[in-house]
Length: 212
Image 1 (cartoon, rainbow, N blue to C red):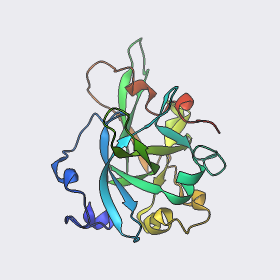
Image 2 (image 1 turned 90 degrees about the horizontal axis):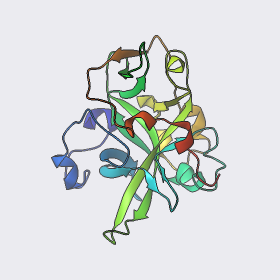
Image 3 (image 1 turned 60 degrees about the vertical axis):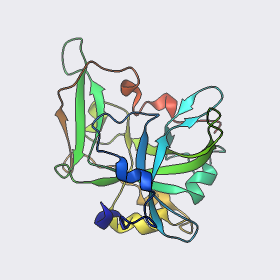
Image 4 (image 1 turned 180 degrees about the vertical axis):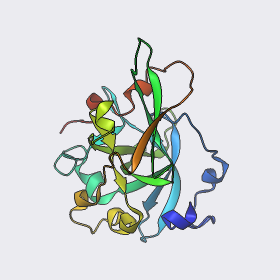
């Protein structure tokens, strides 16, 4: 991971909590995940962040890339606090026949590690009184393959574009967002436990906008 994302697995390059995190197949909104971001000195950091923004009336964990630049809620984070979420795939639940839904795992180039595009922001946790870093995943209209199962899909960043995407000085990062289609991305049924309601909303349309 340190080679792909350009972070050093040393105390000055990685928050110590990250060393205790283990890979997980069940990553859901509200969980804490490793995220790559730039600190004030311009150094890449790998830090645990909570997935999702808790608002007074709802919980938001995805951001529509088409409107992020102009949205009152997302504009500042999209301009100044972009981030990368390391992942070797993502999943969605879909009906492939019958009444039960099947868990589909989507991977790129056979399951290589990729960087999902996101934004992050500090948040004061009212339960603990402590500041936390929280993140949201950028999404766009589904392309070929994903469109058969959902109308949205997560944006990804090519490794060659990691630096300009993370840099606040990049004026228009939208053109760096990649939405892979069939050919580079594939979907495979994955054995799993019965569907958790939250998992079915992983890239749900109505969880993406907040005070646009």
